[in-house]
Amino acid sequence: MFVFKFGGASINNIERIKNTADIIKERADRKLLVVVSAMGKTTNALEKIAEAYYENRKEDALSLFEQVKNNHLGVVKMLLVHNWKPAEDQLKDFFTEIEWMLHDKPVRSYDYYYDQIVCCGELFSTCIVAHYLAEQKVKIKWLDVRDIFRTDNNFRDAGVDFTFTEDKINENVKSLFNEFDVVMTQGFIGATDENESTTLGREGSDYSAAIFTNILHAENLTIWKDVPAVMNADPNKFSEAVNMPLLNYTEVIEMAYYGAQVIHPKTIKPLQNKNIPLLVKSFLDTELPGTIINADKTVNLPPIIVLKSQQVLIHFRSKDFSFMEGKALGQLHKIFNAVKLQPNLTQNTAISFVCCFDGHAEKTGQIAADASLLFDVDVERDLSLLTIRHYDDATISKLTEGRNVILEQRTPETMQAVIRN
Ligand code: ASP
Ligand code: MG
Image 1: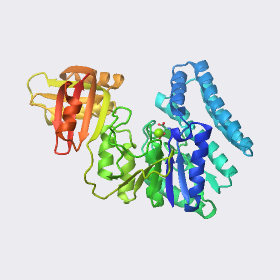
Image 2: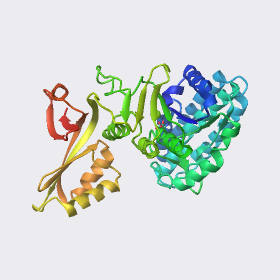
Image 3: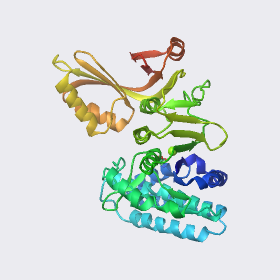
Image 4: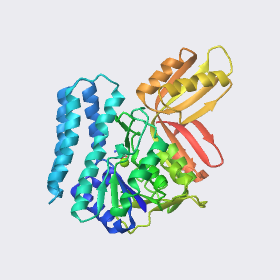
């Protein structure tokens, strides 16, 4: 058995949906669990609806939802020949649920409503793709993953209840493969024990697919993307970026942690724990070898470059010359945890502590405000954080020469620099 994950770009128009369906169909005899993201930019569109609704702009919310509905109904019309009616009926049931909610006034937290609305993107997309594959005579079963993935009620960043989820997969998913070749379901979403929908954090489908892979003990997980392989830098920012055919788990988890937008950072652990390889392949050219990620030691890696923009540097200084150690650092970490924002880089001196954060205006503002009750605080915005793994002098000078580096750190493997733009 194998697990496939397709991102939103793989189904953002009719031609691509057909291409994705072909990839699945040609490999269906291997028994596939397939996770498909929301179509194209649907998740972003749903986020806008959640915002409008929560700001009591009901008419805006409803008209934005109308657009999302029409996009999906349009795809059903263009794509499906025999199954358009059951597909449309299934979509309309989902639509009704959301519309009911949009007509009521919000009384709970924003994050709760966000999850009830945003979870729909993957329900719509998988419904359509599964009906299309059924039309293509693939023996396919569609599942609502909210019946399987149990989470806590930490909306927008829900934690998975592994024991419950494992039991459900063992009881309800494994046996489906006796009858079906493909089981299609959603990533990124789950439900609480009170049947409230939850989401696992943006781009979370990779993580869901990895959990399925672990529990099903699949032979591997393939993440199908619109790039030829995992590259050593973002090709949109660095024209010399190259493919990396082999990587190990450690490298990928570090890259993702430093902000490389390859794979959701939580994806590696479930795979590493059972030593299951991860393949990254191009859905645009399936002949390309892609990247294999496993436990093997990799040698001769090129410098791996991650450039994160919109960073904020916050300096915390003790007000009375007390050392910045245990107690003070504990107080600061409590403040960071309260807004759920962790520093990307930190540096200590005797009486100061400097942290570089993602430029979340609201969260960094809150951190600065809370910390200023205890420390002197300085904030500098609009910076970049450059990370180079397996650096060499040539790469460092090429990327930093003539630039205003205001903080730098090196370990034998990794160099990081905060740069003023
Ligand atoms: N559709 C969700 C997002 O765009 C989850 C995912 O694609 O992984 O964040
Ligand atoms: Mg994605």
